[in-house]
Image (cartoon, rainbow, N blue to C red; front, side):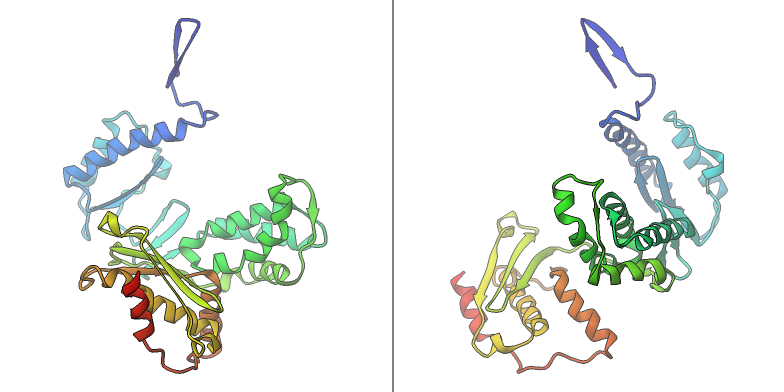
Amino acid sequence: IGFNFEGVDYVYNCLPFGLRTSAYAFAKLTAVTAEVLRRSGLVTALIVYLDDFGGSIGPVPDHPRMARIVATIKSFGWALAPEKLCIGLGTRLKLLGFMLDTGSMTIGVPDSRRDKLRATAELVLANHGAVRVRTVCQLVGQILSLLLSLGLVCRLRSRYLLLAVRDAARAQNYNTVVPILGRALDELHLWAGSLTHLPEEPMYTHMRRADYVLECDASDHALGAIVVSAPQSSFVGACFHRRLRDDEAQWGSLLREMTGYRDAVFTPARRAALRGTAVEVVGDAQFAVHVRQRRQSGGRRAHGPTPRTGSALRHLRRG
């Protein structure tokens, strides 16, 4: 990275950490090394994020192959930290702040991150009557950073904490204090006292990328969806919406959401063959709350009449 000032060129001998483009430039350089490793066939899998490289060479030890991988990385001029180098065969690996366990096939949270989150939650709890907005934002940031390991609970059980500081954060008043009450306080107790009891997310080894992604929602009187990703560019942005029938409007929100998901799939199905493709339906957080509550209450099914598809199909034909 360099710049010109008064006709003189200045070039950094190393990446200046205070420069906002440093991470971008660093990632561009590590991407070259990663591409060479992938094309060489030395690795069967490789994940790269800035200065962290994590990968696999298969289920059996192969020391000569591992030595060639290390030599390839060093050939680009990278200096490797011996204390952080993990080149042995194992089932547990700390990577990007998570603990990958191929024995239990889970993505875990290292103890250091759990302790940091718990300490922040206890600090906010001890001062919940008047706590700094900045501290609450730090806590929510730490919670959301664990989404990969702990799953949707990170989003669902931090919403009221965000609402408690939303107005102050929008005004950039991070040094002011706010009270944490009601549901926000319930969320705070969860993260301060029950963090160790939250289950870790499974590692999906064969999850394929979705061919179609639809975002859906339902209100008290209508259903709607939009295609946000599809193999055909002409599909992206395609919309489906219809008003609820009088009998459907009497259903609970869970059943209305599920009906919207079902009917939304007809949007691409009317224009393309979906057999053999993966369709991902993205719902809203409130729907996930209902599913979670029903699961905790014993898995009771949503009650209501069996929805008909005729009305939905007629509206789809018009669209």
